[in-house]
Length: 156
Image (cartoon, rainbow, N blue to C red; front, top):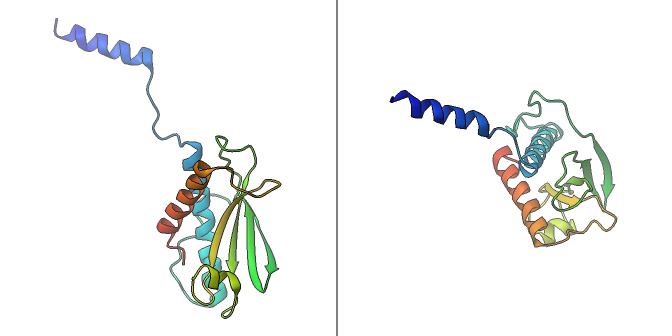
């Protein structure tokens, strides 16, 4: 008689199915892609500066999902990558990340952001016509994704 409630509970669990907590949400997948890109860029920064910097591993066992385009803007080298993971709750377009490597002295963005001379910085922005973030919820999600990724990847 004691086994009947256990059997009923097992049957009810089978009928309901189970929740797979390993499935990432769109935001978690987005954060993971931002993290991978920052780790790749950390390795790039370490190799271009000639230091051994710990910067994290660029190879996470997964192929690179987006290639970076290099350009020069206002005297700074800029690597731009279009991220493949979207945040559909905010917009249907992709997002882009840009790594700015300003020259050692006198770059207006490093002075405006008070980063220090030659400090690299990353920007995360929508790949839309305007390039503008729509609302504070989207801004919070983007800032959170970038902040979490910077913290875990040891980005400079």
